[in-house]
Length: 392
Ligand code: ADP
Ligand code: ASP
Ligand code: MG
Image 1 (cartoon, rainbow, N blue to C red):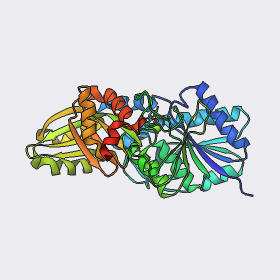
Image 2 (image 1 turned 90 degrees about the horizontal axis):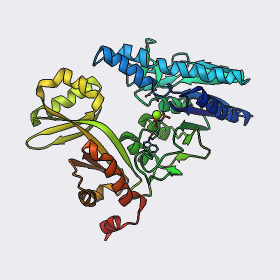
Image 3 (image 1 turned 120 degrees about the vertical axis):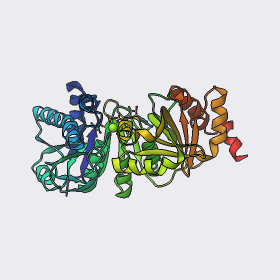
Image 4 (image 1 turned 30 degrees about the vertical axis):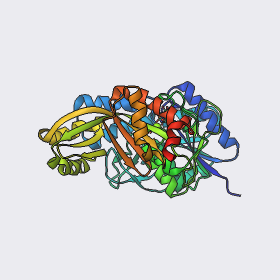
């Protein structure tokens, strides 16, 4: 009988020290001893990618995109070797591979590449020789063989894509929390762990700032029906399974994105700014079109890029945060959210709705309090008066 294969991905905190890498090795060995082939994907050690990015920023506000990828991909190369060495030391055959060595082929979009293809022969060959294979996450190579990276948080996507290419039984994302919560448990005190989250809700959560999973990893797992589980490296438990197409919650959770910039401009420049964003690979979070002004919400770190080519057309830039209520009924809660927040003297700068989400643009100083207040009103007490009143 063919051995089952699992992919295990370990994030930055999980490989953040030699002590943590010992814990990582335990999970890998457990799966191996249970009779599985194991392919492991690792992130850079905690803080390392930020350190590398800030070295580049010290040279240039908009560093050369190709060279930035050469630099940023180095962090994962350190972790993969350390994990392989640890497994060797514990008596297991293990080989580490960079994205290029693992034949992960991407498009040419430096800093935010998409995986096009993974030629798995080399990995399969190593597995057949009883090796545990450790692959550097977050990176691939384009058709020229140049290093590309998949966007911040992209190791999750490396893991899911490898799980798909290798027909894995499950893709396990090991991290520093024990599953997906109704909101970021580091910010929202009464966030609750979810045993299962449906794919559409998880996509909106990831898209709107819940960095526990990289958005393309959720999309890919959904599209290719890859069982995806989030669980903790440091605590026992079965974590959260991402599964199914339908949400049964009015509000599944709250996603928080703290560091955004609202760029305001004259309405007639809005279309050209949007075009520039597309050309520069700047992700647009929201667009506001009013008679007197227009606004484009982008990540704070993308602002320098946009200013470089568009500064004379920009009226103002302002730091903002976005709180997104996720769920099929979320968009019905605009008035209730206004009431809840005005009771605690928090002003909403702007609201946006979609079929599955209510987004609130807030001042960064208010985001944590607002998240806790709205979570308690709409998520924890799901039969609360605030929700009931909508359906009366
Ligand atoms: P890793 O380095 O393992 O990839 P990340 O820092 O990228 O880990 O993602 C894990 C973090 O995501 C958690 O520490 C938590 O603060 C944050 N997070 C945000 N939203 C959620 C959520 N809804 N559920 C769980 N964690 C969340
Ligand atoms: N090391 C990369 C980052 O910090 C990729 C990842 O961790 O998934 O964004
Ligand atoms: Mg991550």
